[in-house]
Length: 378
Image 1 (tube, rainbow, N blue to C red):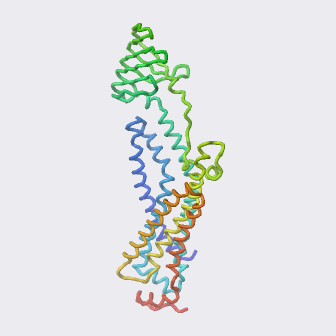
Image 2 (spheres, one colour):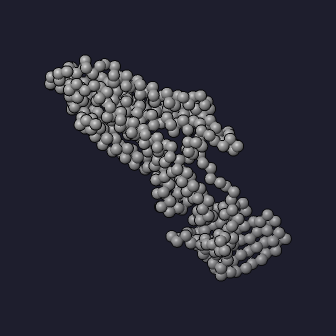
Image 3 (cartoon, rainbow, N blue to C red):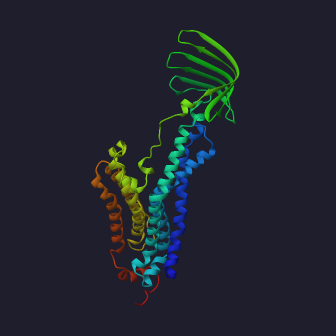
């Protein structure tokens, strides 16, 4: 790679990295706000909250990459053009392709990174996050007792605790259980905590009493120093982790198990997600081409390129929104999947046509006069 190519690439690479980091941090903050209920409602640790937030990063990065590339390219190219560095490149005899090739190589590299994220890293992270959320949802400590609230973790079972301390111990517990034969038992205890006895989950109650009403209406009253309330029936669940289309690998999207009813009914949605995984990296190239069109696609201007940048930014937003609409439409019509590829390819072609619609050789003298220098001899 020649010296001028490396210089142009460095000028683009720095803003791109900074833009990706900045937009990813903003997206993570938004994701963390939506995951706060893990701590507030489910009483999970900060480590679980951090793990779920970080596992969402691959999908968030894929969303912000095209925007980061577009913003960074506009900033870097606008500076290079207004400071007449690109004008000097044209005046020195460089072709338009030679000038834009570092930017397009950078966009292709980012697109390849996005493809790797889409095919391998995102589904692995999404599955790990889904498993973690499943563990949170089935966590007995979180679902059984909520401080100061009456909860019904299972049919016929009501649980109340006045407070829960930092160690997870319950204070002033109340448990009312109604069995299928009509009998009911009420447990009251000063303290309680979750434990395991003989491999079975139990709730250890201390300093309490039980009141049991048989189905004949007989009351039995008993006090105890320690009582183990069996939680095994609550822990035994037939619920399985269900992976959404965004959690699945590419082969699972294109070749689903049609013996499963859910996958058979959602085959078009899986196909749309699979094509989106392959098509979305093309937006990185399309947005870079659109940024080049906004800056280099027109003549040199000492007053800046605010109007062209605003128009191109609106066009880029419209292209990406239209891409989401097309992906949603593909869930009902499989033949529309071709549009997921056609849209970014068409945007790239139109943008590059704008860049190359005039030959650089004819523009070199005018650029040179704008830069206050003579064009280089052929």
